[in-house]
Length: 357
Image (cartoon, rainbow, N blue to C red; front, side):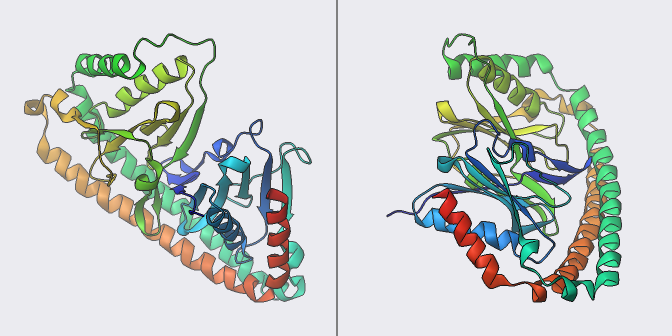
């Protein structure tokens, strides 16, 4: 049997707004058969629990979505098995997930049931101190990321000022006419699923675009911030949902309200934004250069370069604080892991697997 296909993405991110969550869009309650909320402290095996279940379903031929953690991109915050309409989610801070419809859709799995509380409590002071330090490092990181975004936005505003919006409107309409080919407005409004394809992580900017963009046709839009790529994508998205098509929207790691990638599954079409911060290593149907819509003679390239340098410094400093937070978090995990009954966790995982299959 052929293995299933993997898609990787982020349900939350370290953004200019602080930690920003799109967890509610992972699997809607009215579409889900089961959503397991995994609870427990750091180092108790939540990520491994979910990852192993995901890998077993891959071996059985099912496609699986791995939801990665923006604070540790090697770790998993969730797993979705679309064909089973099932998700397993890390329900701990900062992305607290609690049952919305317990007993009908949601179920809590508390891995704390399998730890030696007395052993953990011996490190109470160290754990409390460590958690406070993690929190402070993230606060500092978010201040630097916000400062970086202000610089980024300054460059965007300069470019936007000299970009011809009428040309963006025109090319948007041309694509709408081609893609939807006289499909009329529907009585049903399509759904939007919001997630991140990239994130600001301890490893820097990480993206999983090559796994996310899995349609036959992929269109690329490129251009400096401010050239209107997101305007184009928003127009395509609106046209799709007005015609009853569901869409997957992937937002900017820095600005969680800026649309960067769009998938219209029913039409087997994707759109991706390409810039100096992320590029999808896939084959494109067509590329549209939005820099062509900007009057470059009015752009102060020296200011843009200065902003780029300052942006890199501020974002880099923010990432350094996320790295510190992860290091302290890893130390905290070391207080929990030795006090876990991982054999009992394994049995719980097997029991959970049986419920899904």
